[in-house]
Image 1 (cartoon, helix red, strand yellow):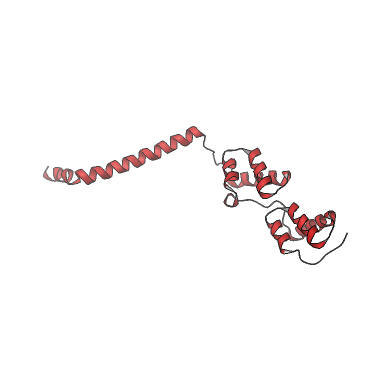
Image 2 (tube, one colour):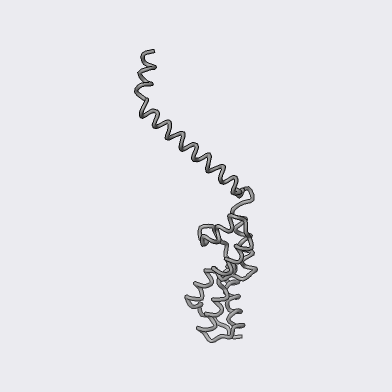
Length: 152
């Protein structure tokens, strides 16, 4: 194996930051002429040296909408498939990312079923309607009510 102490090319580092180790290996192979096995060994040594796992901890903010939507719906297989497709993760890395995302969202966070979502939106609109009615009542009848109680 060829040992290199040179820093990794910028595109390889960028691929590693995006947790796309397969692309990083390919880019290192193409840019340096190392064999794929040697490129993988260099990437692994780099990851060990920098203490950065290949599968970064994902946050909900950095996820594509399709991934975060599938995660909110509790569809783990779809989340794993999308992470493999969109982020270039392997199966194990995608599963670890899903576990990390679930840990971030917390066990106490309850996912609302469609029925509960409809109930909560009905309550919201009922509240809005009440506020609007109170405003209109005050606007149209405020002086009359004020004068009624003032004369009594």
